[in-house]
Image 1 (cartoon, rainbow, N blue to C red):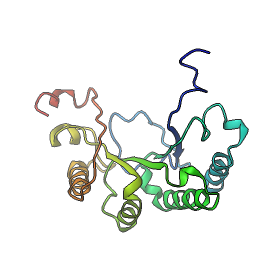
Image 2: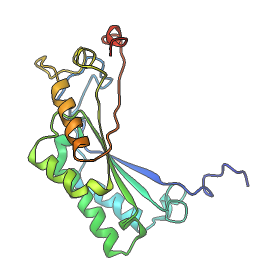
Image 3: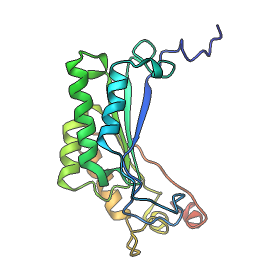
Length: 196
């Protein structure tokens, strides 16, 4: 048995739900140049959650409570908050089903979301974040300073997004939460990197 045998390692695992292909920004460096309109169906998410909580043997090599005492449920897009209702529905289903089953992940889970921050102040997003803040790993993509960020991260009509993203990050941290971030450096913004 090798020391790196993944079946023997005790690790938290990540299960990622891509809730949508859509995004409300049109960043010049986006690798998803042919964005679709696909949306995750709740029934598909529900089926995977049931498999996870029932410890379906087909998942055993990757995730089970013997090698994964905790789980991270990650929501990505596009811009995931475009599907906040779906995210909330999936999260609630997971929490309720884990509790009903007396599953260890009922208390040993985290929710992970990375957003562009532009929808952060909507009522539904605020309600979701408040409800899940004790189990939330949340980040907003901010590409350095305003000049660097707004050189690429814009709405389809060309409006910049830095002020919204920055205000969202500041608000989240002002509430006592930790904020991570992702930064993208590309040919269109690298000339601003030194000053940022």
